[in-house]
Length: 262
Length: 291
Image (cartoon, rainbow over all chains, first blue to last red; front, side, top):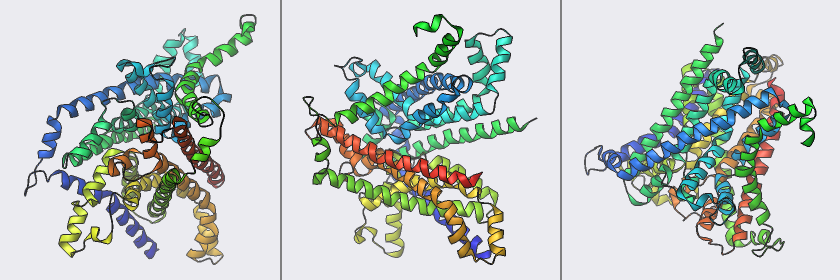
């Protein structure tokens, strides 16, 4: 038992070195901008960059649209499959997992061929259309995570009884969906939303190939042209990921506590 | 459809199917049709003739070498990630460490497995690049010149250890439940029968765990194979892996044949598809013991 405990601590030490050294290295590098002393100059330079503010804002907006429209697509579908079409469950689940199998670059390649300006639906013909296609591509990318978290939350509630109760009280389907189902799967909606936020904020492939000024392509551009700003941006991006994952953990923990209450 | 209005049952069926119509239309338009478009395009010439030439052209040296580097990077990072991830998962489940270590590591894994893309490349450049922290410290403290050994972060090995940063946490996240499912009784029973720790692992634990281990490694492989952002930000286009070649092809038709580009995409789908299907089959097998 003694040796296995020592081995366990050894493994954890290796893991910690692997995880923390790059983060410490990045942070240290981001402080080196002023010669000879540590300073936050790189961060100052990043935050005062107009392009940083614009691309960060653009990606936030895209993430918001992705979450809202993604959830409007996923929650009713998951609800309907549970209530009326349980035989379609494997099919729908399989489809939601497909974006994990097909690489993002392949999906966006298909979009560019199918929806270019000379096709039957010219999404990429206008800026608004391209933005719409970008949101739709992000919904596709986050489908596995959104569907799974919503479906897990739905497992915890009795969809059938809730629906019947609402119907007996005279509710119509928009009321059932938005005032019964949505609030009851809020923990799933929120955890799906946070992970989607983390994915969209750092996403590079889709935005770069659709030529939209998102945060991911901006990061790549800075990386190719500047020395110290990239490390500062990496720390900022890591903070964004921590922020969304931290909120996700909070939501899961909170909903577990709520559901374990009698 | 035309009978829908005549009988109540049929109308209900139609309504049932209409309920998932938005989802199905979305999936068709933005997932299935775009993919099929590329897959079928791989079998046609630019003027619409059916052909296998595009597939055959994948086996030319320049494209094969791209696939070969991609496969090597993916295999190496999947095996490295699986090995370290397995030991970490083992440590927090069976190693007898305090529970805060377990929850801390799992939380961190959730974050780190999502910390990929361009920023990850920056992090490793700042750490192991020519003026990175570790490179500088090794040189100043113990006089070890990392770059004199032929090491380069912008290389096969550099990309592999960078990918492992998200591979290890993914392995930890997937394997921890599998290790949690190992029953104490199995260990006790084998000890009563006089088995050593080594015999227990070789004859009981590993045979039960191998589908999970294999399956997760395949998932890690596919995960690395499709990734582009990290590699592109790290190496530019100097390391010729398949996603970067495809990226260049989409941008500017570097292969001078649009349909060969479709075949390149098809090759990626086949490789990630096969490893995911094997993963699903293996994880079904793994679940047998977890009931």
